[in-house]
Length: 428
Ligand SMILES: NC(=O)C1=CN([C@@H]2O[C@H](COP(=O)(O)OP(=O)(O)OC[C@H]3O[C@@H](n4cnc5c(N)ncnc54)[C@H](OP(=O)(O)O)[C@@H]3O)[C@@H](O)[C@H]2O)C=CC1
Ligand SMILES: O=C(O)CCC(=O)C(=O)O
Image (cartoon, rainbow, N blue to C red; front, side, top):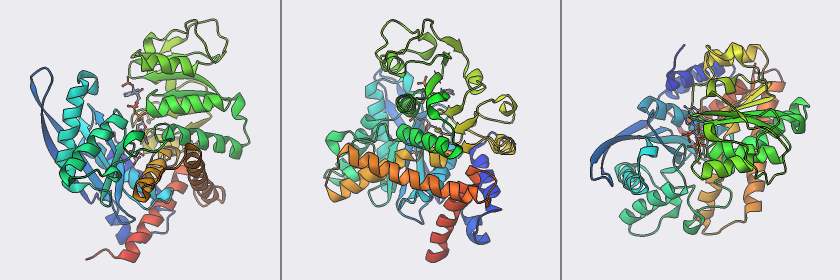
């Protein structure tokens, strides 16, 4: 088995193809990204030093509509990773039935070592580099790891400067002041929370008695933690890259979020005195490794950081009752087969983390309409769309058509994407 995320995505497709009604020629086509642009990005840093970064934008498949997908800033970005992430975006958009194809962008950099001004220059350089490839009807970037509304504002501004007028619809995940939608910042975490609640309903288990461990406490992990906490679940562990905090009585997700927002590391987190949620614990949390967090005996494990963390090497040690994949690609195919054999429900990434792209779509629609919706409308539409994709996935799995939820989700996504290709035709 492989650590290569692209190979992992292909293996997931192969696994699902056994159960999907897809033309062989079209299926072969779907294994190849449409195009990937590699850009060289010289940036004069605030220190006066010039650093040359490398970035990518991959457009994986555009049969169903404009390409859509986030931009990641991370030291471990590779072309293959960006191509895998663009593939997963394609299956995600198809599964939740958005009129989009899939894309992804990435820049190899360590954002923690860059100042805000460095990040702005890098973002503007990157946007200029991929400018000819993106646009409201062509390819619409959004946030992913280590990018945020400010990054999207710089992208929107750079794109707009070249067009000569403001083009809010060119990116999503923007600040409200320039055409962002209420609800996008927390949308991915909200979607994770909704599908976890739906899974518990389906399994006839009680979420208010459930313990949850979340790897990663960034945008997605922290919002999922807060919303699941609000839904009554007990968040017993979470982490950043430095390590995890674990308290079997439950962590105070509000205090923890403040600690992280103030620049604190999870490995430094202590319970402190200020507990606004009223949660009572006497002790500071234990500090454990990210690897140990994955093996905790919890009702739900939510990987919400990087890909390839649940593998053949640790799957036998996993004790979680269910897995909800907030991160993209956290489980390798080898581990997946073991979990499927053990009947551990795994809500796949293309469903579990689709809340982000759903609300990005709602932002894009509002920009096109030059009209803005209230938060309640956005959240209700998110819940309706992700709930409906959840029901369709369950219907395919529960009827015995597929061995697990991932295969069920992939068969739906592959059939929809292949169907678009069949109607449009493979040849110009
Ligand atoms: N943002 C979005 O809307 C969407 C994101 N996703 C996926 O969700 C995942 C998280 O994204 P997001 O929350 O936006 O990213 P953030 O950058 O906001 O947060 C990432 C979190 O993961 C931690 N982390 C990074 N590397 C590791 C590692 N090697 N081991 C353990 N923890 C690590 C980070 O710690 P530290 O802060 O110390 O670096 C941080 O807590 C990604 O897989 C992303 O692709 C999916 C759909 C949409
Ligand atoms: O909001 C979007 O358009 C895409 C978010 C994203 O990158 C993802 O779902 O992985």
